[in-house]
Length: 116
Length: 182
Image (cartoon, rainbow over all chains, first blue to last red; front, side, top):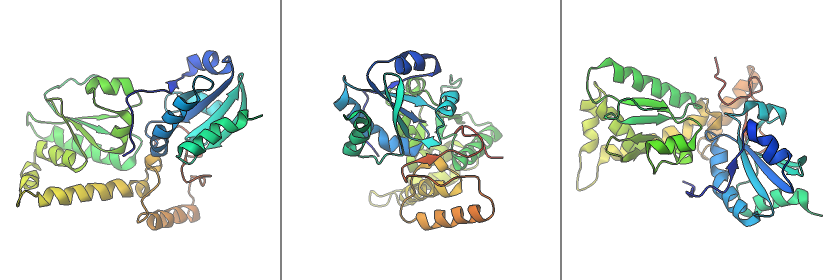
């Protein structure tokens, strides 16, 4: 079983906070569309937490629970979970569906859209 | 969700998994069938980690989805095969059967070990029986799953193929993971 830590470095955004925290957020922001019942999301979680720790405070990582916020999932045409969408100053600059659960891979995925 | 009967064990189940829902329904019916005071409260895990933690501080929502959890009235938790045994022990009608899991031979509980194995197998084959969110099946389940998927494709399936093996595709119709198959 993956080692889930008690400290949650990934903040959950909802339909009511998405606009303020993501679309009006400054700099690079990664949003993971997930659900807790998705086993692949569970496998990804410890690695994503580690990546969140590595990239903060330069980059923020949020999660959207699509089981709760289905309209957000619809508006970003989420086909499944986990899906990572990268935003820069509110605009979508990258997307990855089902990233391989590996810290170096996820780090590359969340960094790549912002590489100059 | 508040648990009304705090003297009864609480069985948490994955509401997004068809196999888990069927088992939970069976347990609920069995628990309501008898008049035993040691019935079981059955409830879905849900989507709120904080709410879940309010039931037991040591409860992690990811772990709850990964393995069956039974919350005991004394604050302890039983997982996997141990949880299944405790559920059967608390249901009227299976109590006698469940007593076999406590039989110990030279410090080993053979029936409990068999139950643990059976639970592990069931957990592995869940994806084959309609739990798309249950993850990548173990190597030994993959041929079975492949055959089932092929059959669904040939006879009219409703799922698109995943772009990645680490990806849970949502159904084409009703993409909400809460959408239930008819």
